[in-house]
Length: 533
Image (cartoon, rainbow, N blue to C red; front, side):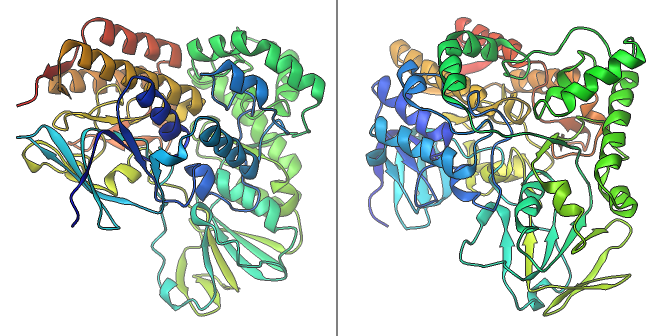
């Protein structure tokens, strides 16, 4: 192995987090390198190239806010941008701020070990290269490590097997018989597009999601100009709101609203935007009775939308409250489902028993397949971190520490792993927010922390066990009054003793920002700072 390259900081990942982190590290005068497994920048928007891939948050809000000039020079094409447009935006950012020379592409970090004598991290890659760095920053993304189902006989299948998180553009689906697994956000978007070109499509569903219709017109020049003029006020609202959206929940509860008025308001919200239904009343995520009224409305709307009652029965969620699992945006999904060449299989009542060379077999039938597609989600919040063999003080492994669920102080740092930071890690608003806003807040906090350490002559920072435990208890405490812990969703994790806990921080993006700022202002309360050995 060649001598390791030495930097002040190594950043893993070149998506929204990694690009901005590199900008800020250079800004405070630290030498830094980004390592990226892909051949280009973009993170999740580099890898997720499946048909129909797009963001379900307004493009104008789902963008960087750190540079007013960047906001003014970039014009979004649609309300909800497609993957190619978001990737083009991130490529533009990389070029505009001369970031490419600080990124090592086509390289995957495989291991990182804390050297206690040197107070530095030794980082290894799959290309045989290594890095010697003071700070290790994980910009790996909360939704980046794909999760595949363990299906019997999958190795026997003779056709292409595709995954939405690692799409292969070379496979032509035109006229093919396709078996598609998964009806979360990625699955809903994929089915809407491939349903237009395949001969037969069998959609295998296990945990269907609520999906609301989202109109996606091109943004007019007038709309873009108005948005650019309103950026300062919008950004301020995003940074201090609960979910980092510029639209706040409307005051008043659903259960106390007159039925006719409630129905009118919900009808209006149904097609307004992805999350408008959840924001129409301010108690939907907290009050079971109010949530039940809105959930019943959504179920009724979907019953009217899906023309086949049997398909509707299999795709309309009955065992989860609206918002308990992530609400999805649909543009053409139910149109595809309504086609005669589309079959829906509920694997809970018709489990897969075998996969042959050209079919998926259940205990009730056989479904021919030329291609199998998996849109089965991610090992959320922790998968990409656990994929790396990270070992902290005393050789302790992050995989073993998180075997029963993640722990982190503020979602930023883990006790026993000094000088390591996690951007939008577990215990932060992360996936329960407009994540670009949360990314910027984390990156700016880490940069401030490193600059303060240098000014104070500190070389090592580590989260304290007591502070970490107290934060985990607080994260669980604020989630308990909400509907979230009641759902079986990828938001949930487990403690060491097996107790189910909610991984993201649901106390609000604004409140979380205030807590992080207070921690820094108090001399990094909950952290131990020290000098190098």
